[in-house]
Image 1 (cartoon, rainbow, N blue to C red):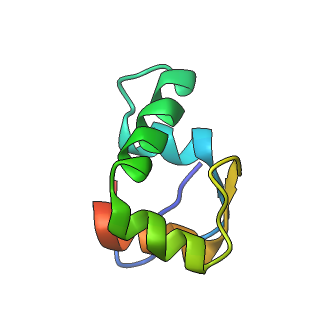
Image 2 (image 1 turned 90 degrees about the vertical axis):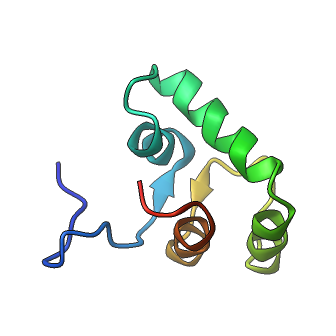
Length: 78
């Protein structure tokens, strides 16, 4: 499964928390990777604000393409 576009970067699309967590932390189990990503998000007030403006709720398990773009902007691409 590939997420890269022709530029070699990951294109923002709908991702589950676990799927995106595994991209950021491939050395962790999927469950731990998703928890780690959630921690990174929660401890970053700028990112939390950006995500909330796009309709995000901390209980969501799915990120919209816009939310993924916000995560990439703040955390960088995995």
